[in-house]
Length: 636
Image (cartoon, rainbow, N blue to C red; front, side, top):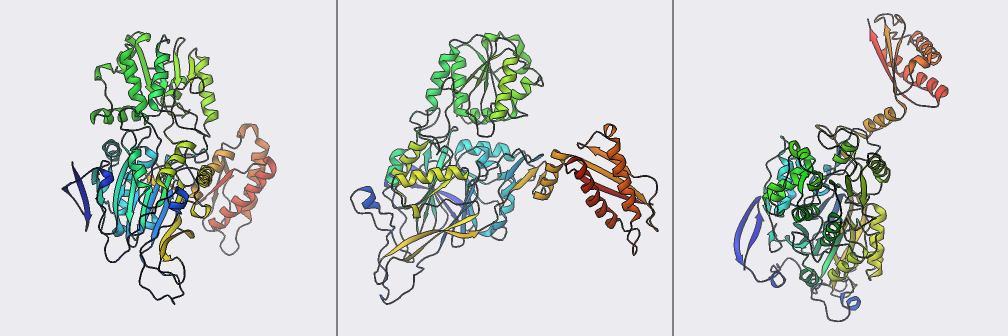
């Protein structure tokens, strides 16, 4: 077999053909004289054999030396997003002066972030290290892993990027929507490829399964040992339009002295094993056999494996498919062009023909099963969709589980669906949704196969990380070797003396107290990072208690008040029904204007501050609300 050995040196990426045997028997890079080679583990049971020690060959040193030795460069692992939330995933692996990046995702805004489109990682740590960033690796094509690419790549020097074929198509599709984004230098990879960053760092891959094809875990070979980043994964023995995870390769990695395993924690709180996507297709087939009328399916646009099963069932039952929503159409278009979705384009029906086809022959697929306000399903139930309107006889299938925090929105959506005469089927009634993340037993299997010396749960909220850490303890990883970190917290590894007087050394890891900036960078329209916490606070104040504008006109020389102050209320009170309060407020403003600064009578800043403070206090006493007070001083 011939594979591509991709080397990266001095800012250039090249590919040369090299012969290779199966992945498991590839020769390891020869170790240089400047670093030590890990010893093979001895035989025996897992706990005894592994012992979580990364022993290296002895070094000729005086046995009288009493200090811990730093025998090689430091390996630093820094997660900029994904340790305190689901989304915004971005990880830095730094060895000496070389940095590689894994994923650049976005996070959708919380309910208390009015006006924010999404959030991306803070990369200020990399501002003076652009020349050190050698490559970017993307595990898969979901927005929480690729959404930040157009905003970040130009800021870090646009280094080469490596990802699977499907992921590359989705990244390119998103990138062209941003005119200021650089032309990306993307290299497509497979599980047989190895990327040489330098003599000290090489990167390999192994295939994993998720709810989208072409997902890869990343293996980073460093002088201190191997670091594995799983990305999002589940163990699916019969995936749709994808290869199953290479469990044989994963098991062989367990014999290669893995220093650190960083593993997906999104479903760590759920017991058992994740359901296969193929099983979901079988359950949906049973439904389609019985349903009359239109079938409307709400799912994620990224659930391409689910979409493939729906296309297969549509063909089987003689139905045509209407795709609704930009993201759904874009993802299906990309996946079909590169061969990951297989269907006859004639099965698709355009909006203009939707009402000309019998209801029994239609399937409509769209987004919005989480109750998102602007998604397809919400627009349908609010009678805002240009073509699709619910009617008796329709069946709406919610083919996704409830994401925590969306319960109320989904319940309201379901209420509106049934009020309009449609029927509902959701995942609690039948197995019509399979998650894309490994559950507890799958996670334990991954850890048992990899046998890492150190373990770090990633990609979830803190309580999920802690649940994953507890699973790691149950399978025998020492608690002191498990790092539950926060965003920006530095995890550091280095070689030190194992025991005074002995000529053996181990790699020592620790969760340090050092933190790099990892706060939110919010994207609002074309603005990136220009909405600060103060601006967001002001938006929340206005959304909660409204605002009142106080307009005062004064003489520019004497500072005397001219005319009567004008008041404008927005979201605070209805002025016509609160005349007494308005008059009290106007009287207070007049008194403030008369109490001018004797040294600078026309000092508008002095007047503004007094209006803001004293009017705010008056309104709070009267209403127990704190509207934003905006004073406007006009000098004439």
